[in-house]
Length: 622
Image (cartoon, rainbow, N blue to C red; front, top):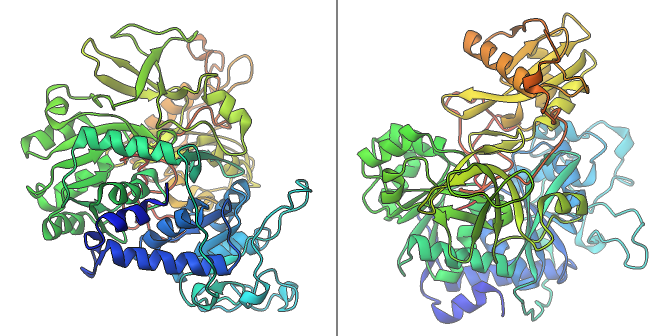
């Protein structure tokens, strides 16, 4: 088959493909096809060829949508990355993905250049560099004179980053940066300056890798899910069977496009022949207004987003047929609120590894069986397993194991993680704990591991703990999630200080330079030592209990001294096996995909994504 857009434009060229919510500008499939073709030609002119890995760090915009389809037309794998990461977080992801080139825009150029071309230099300062700084933030730094800085000042020397096939151990070249806008940094190349190249004739098979999406993992060892054409087609088809699709449907895309729940609607729209209404960022009242203004039929949200939309406007417009709600557990009170105000909520459970939804409940099912995520989608099998992998009967709780054509076959470049998460026959051990009732409805309760889900985003406690331990005034640290009435969970840390004068504010400033905003510890407590088992493992239940008490007592204000470490050999905690450093299991990110950045803007701007803005929504699924 050819790329999806080429098939769609041949079938319905005059159908609406995209609406830009901010301006109301509308593109037909013929318009979108022309933009994708032109972009594919320019990328080809820069030397991008089938099989390359094209990384992207952009906010939601029309050029991103065109790039999604241009990548498929060229036969390259798309690697969407969050535009809310710091350069130190982005750089290892580019390396893990073997990125051939990195596409950015004016607002992400400094981040892209710092991560791709200067990963060992001033990466931490990327977010503070002025957009017009020709030196990418290195003004006055003689270590990068014009003659020896990595990068390209014209397309003539532009060279995609590839390791020679005959020398796989060779050091990779710097990842070249391509901007969709006029670059301010002379190390980036503007796409408009690229020559027109020949767009190859590419044919896709169902087993061919289409894109690679990141799930939770430490900054130094991010995990990449490789999704094939077959995975995406199976997921889109099964979703349509469950939700229903009409030819004139419009779907509101308010999640960031680097998430499963943000990017999948683009592929699905091309398959269905429907339209996407694209928002540049999430705003609760504005999203409701856009639903009404554009007659939107469906939208993907995480619970915090839906709650804020209801707070802003009371209810949602009657044109909506499907509110796909995932990315984090939906509170029962929110489902009941949807019932009372006739909101067509579809609680869903999914993961990046499943190309989106695994199970989805229709509104009547959600209201009658509060807490359910429905039955598995068509072609998808879910088994509840016990400690030894045995299948458990209805009503018994165990790990949920999923199989079917939408399930990825592993993590790119990470055979150990693949072996841990996938069975010999290709089933995915999700790491989620739940049960199935007698009628086949699924209920997801928690995680096998201790991953934190805050505002629909997955946070690896080990990554945060490692950053805290890197502070010279910290001897040790453990990180856990504590309940938060708005975000579901917040990141909290129990810290053992070597410097008694170290404050929570100093720790936050240190972490802010190294972590995205949604990963920052919002509750910090200090203790003389961490509670541990006989084997030396941190007793995470004990850590969590203490942090919950601190959070309750202080309401997230000034940190306090935790109570003494106490008996570190409490038998009830002897089974705790995660010291907060590991990443044990796949990232549960879907529903709208939970896996990298935050889903919503905080009204007071306190939960920023490293650049003071928490506007993109992570929701891996719908």
